[in-house]
Length: 483
Image 1 (cartoon, rainbow, N blue to C red):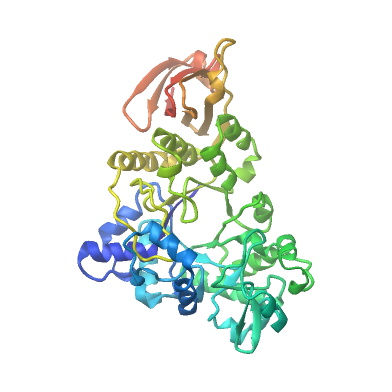
Image 2: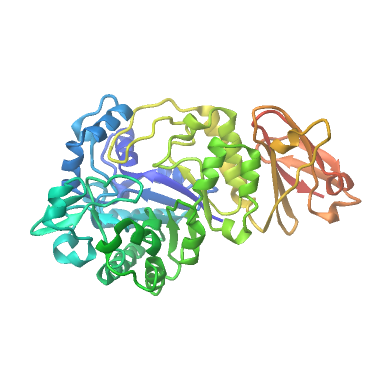
């Protein structure tokens, strides 16, 4: 299992510069800061936004009133210097010299590796900046338009040199104003993507592929039609990932994925795919909905990324108030698959910062929440090993609150753990039969992993009618089970 910690690199380094009173780039991050980042329970750090950002893209952003309004909303005292441009409008896949360049990144990777933590970087497969070298050096990588297209729909096309190109988009939203669309069906693009990913693999241990599903044959054909040309026999990722792994066999591929295409992307080579469906159920739905989601094939679940926030989602503290966030966090920290934590989540930050900005507003840290996450991340570092099982919850004819309980177990040899969560706003009671028949005839001790509470129970009860639980709203048990 993998726990990934996402950092907004530019904002983080600027705050470290202020904290230490001197410029801090990737190669100059103090050891105690790496200790804070690579805490026990974190397996990988995703440094979001290390590549060269586009000056042309920045100019477009500075003229876009809708974007500027979103910047001011997040940062009321916004200054022009706070707008760095989008890290997903990539000028070139070279580490920005302002944050330390390639040498600084190599030093950061070494500092993480010394702590047993892998480094993950971004790849944006769907589009590039309007001043990316490929527009002049490899124009066959891009989706082209005509002068008539540009005259008819200047929001969807742009001119670069003597060529007209389509602006990048996904099929459900208007084109993005600051990027140019790559052609997933073009042989030249596929070759260029392999080269780019091999280069990223030279510098990192994993890659998070932005909006990975947009390059899939079916999706791309529906989005671009005749402009893309004929679809190749082989899907984009099925072609690209094996060729990259000829050079970097252990490179971790993580897909940002939506629209229930996670399984298909796993089959095309991704190690992990975002589990947006679980996120939506935790934020908007109830325990029954979450439980239904967790009945999916275990092999599929082990290759999902569970999260409560990332740079694209609202802050968890705003959509999961109070104890509901803690209950959801216990869930994502103890389910099979990878877990994604977002820098600022542990402190209870509430402002979702647009990725264009290099500064964020000051917000008071929620010390109680920070302490909870510290204990949770550390305590669950070794829970998710061995066999996972979704557990049944039983109730009584006059009390159906057990329906609001979520329960599962982990076991690896003599290491056994039980998670029970009341995912509702009212008290819940129920019994959860534990799956270990060898508990019968023995006394057992159940110990909470996040505090010092222990409970003595008879194994016949635990393996028979089941562990009795009575939980307040949004409360949980995270237990080790010892015979």
